[in-house]
Image 1 (cartoon, rainbow, N blue to C red):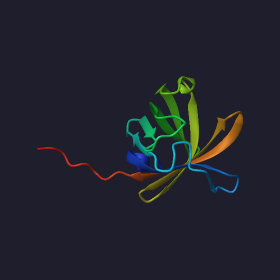
Image 2 (cartoon, rainbow, N blue to C red):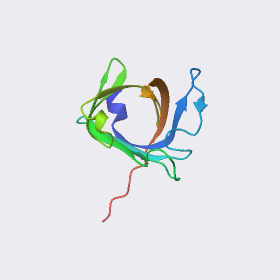
Image 3 (cartoon, one colour):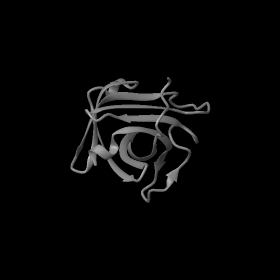
Length: 131
């Protein structure tokens, strides 16, 4: 799976989900978040996400570090982050690749309780280079 993930991905959806996997509310970044995920072949990762409408929650979420696949899961080791409590932390995610769609699932502590989250990413089209 490692080589299949290398590239640039655009965020299509980011939802909190219930025990059955159904979306709950609009998600932590609102109904239409924007985001970019970059996996490099040499093991670097960068994630940037933000809401596109005014939201009472975070206005930007981002981090960078390194990544690997271990036991069929994607592990991000965070080196810099908009959240100080994430620096130096490893976060493990379930990842499912279906063509150009990457579905990432994780559980995080939100308000002292576990919250399941699903992010849907689509592989970015190549960008033309200026001449």
